[in-house]
Length: 303
Image 1 (tube, rainbow, N blue to C red):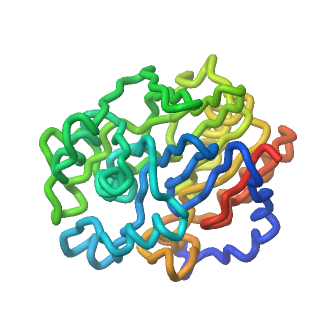
Image 2: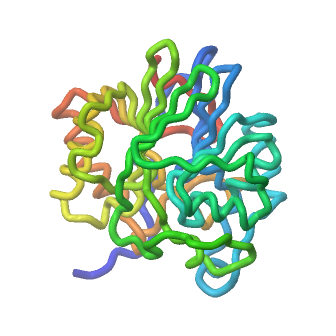
């Protein structure tokens, strides 16, 4: 089979960028890759907090470090001054690289596994601003209760394994090993429930007994998998938790700075068209609405 050239045209899915702007209560803001701001006006949680987005050449051939100018711009553009928690969904660089710097700027705690903790230690975050959680662990922040359920990274995991010592940047991208890949359940005191799946991987049966009406579903590399994998991924996440609305994340080209806008990953790294074809079919079959989030816009996925 000949490899496709170029990249999918995201404008083909313009009608999917249709979530309503949040006018109050709980809002969710998409900030690229798997970075999501969940805030209700009193409490604010940020997954990953990845803003640096180093170039492909830098990632492949050089050393990477947090880009503090890009982090400052991203926080300012998103209106983020204070956070209660920064939650890396796993410890590859496109998730955890900026987590400690974002926490330092916003007064937040970095919450994750031992690998995420070693990234935070390597950037000098104090011990009292690092919280290590395990499979099934929970923590409360304001009106939010967060639960971490162990998952898997979508194959292939290019940097598998745990981070066993502090990571001091600048360093190679490969230093940011995956650690635990999490399914994150966020429950607000009023009963609103969200699943955030940072990577398009799953553990069979891991989410049985969990409920969420909204699922933010990571789809990076999903378009390169056999169709049976996509169907099982849907069943193990969306179907298992009973989600009625799905918002797709981690589809954008994370080598491109946010100031240049979002585009899909090239066909060499993923095939968004395949993913959309299969997931649209599954959503239509199950009566689930399928959406893409708009960068920077605080949205209400329950509206």
